[in-house]
Amino acid sequence: MKVGIIQQANSSDLRHNIDRLKSSIRTLALEGAELVVLQELHNGLYFCQEENVDIFDQAEPIPGPSTDEFGSLARELGIVLVLSLFERRAPGLYHNTAVVLERDGSIAGKYRKMHIPDDPAYYEKFYFTPGDLGFEPIDTSVGRLGVLVCWDQWYPEAARLMAMKGAELLIYPTAIGWESSDHAHEQTRQSDAWQLVQRGHAVANGLPVIAVNRVGHEADPTGQTRGILFWGRSFVAGPQGELLAELGQEEGLRIIEIDLERSERVRRWWPFFRDRRIDAFEDLTKRYRL
Image (cartoon, rainbow, N blue to C red):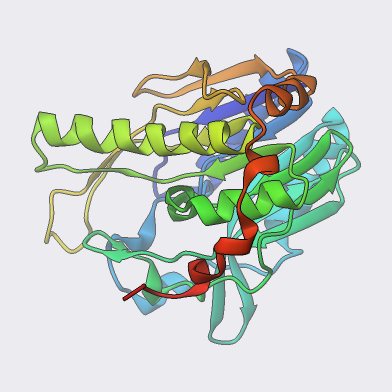
């Protein structure tokens, strides 16, 4: 499978951001991409640096304007497309939602972000209700996709449950960066840990991982911090954690070829699923063990 990834620096001009994304998607499709993955909340700025009720006006229903517009593009290009949207489910009920569009432009499925952070500059609990669709892979014409979102990428349980349900890929639309006052050594530790834990999910589950992050500096509207510098480094790892591709800290797009049959071979060599002691794991559903 040929997978296209796009990491983009956004502005407050949603129309401009979307037009640039569509141009990049078109470029990747013309180069042979069958599946294209976009970054988290790709239409605009990462608005969770502040708590502002007016921002809820940016949310949209699913299906809605974005699924219609990107669905039309997916149908024109004959590709599967992974979106990340601010979903207005009902009055007062909003989610951070990934949507998978099929080659014909229809909605193959969606996933609502399950783990919602609440940290300085990442006030997501103000905006997003935790997901209620579970960890269910989405069947498409290019395979069964285990789509998760950003903060979910730190949790091995989420990756495992997707793999146990037959996901052939793990996909993480992402918006993560440094608070601009972090010193260089801390920045390196954070971004290395981010990549390392996801490559670990690839190894532990014997399947490829695709992580697509945004780039660029976005100011804090409140002036309380120096804003976020999104570190990019979007990457694709194979089923042994091997890096198949990694972008830098600037805008970019790339096509990566993934051999889905390799996952089966790796699981035969490293049979982690065979040797799991499921009879001894019941405490994993507890908050803590005393």
